[in-house]
Image (spheres, rainbow, N blue to C red):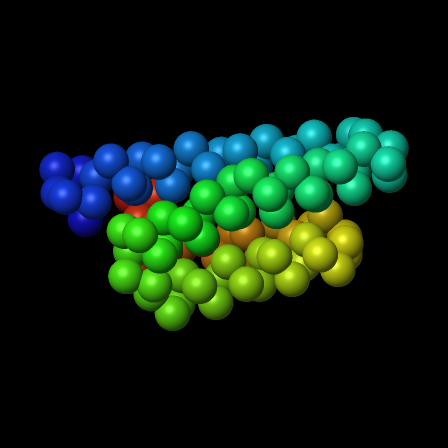
Length: 105
């Protein structure tokens, strides 16, 4: 995937939202549980919601991407270990058609 196609601005936008999730997951490791819950809520309400919007508006509701976002949301809502949330999130970094393509930049 080259970054000169019609989806380029949206791939870059998805990358920013993925970075926001990464930042919160890193921060979660260093804060008390009360702050952890707040950060998990921020993931759901902010960047994850925006990735879902992009999926619908610009990425044709690709089932593979939707499945990965569902896995992330399920892990966050279940408040399982941060490592397990990371594993769900890392699936978005794969180099495949079932991602936003941010792994290419």
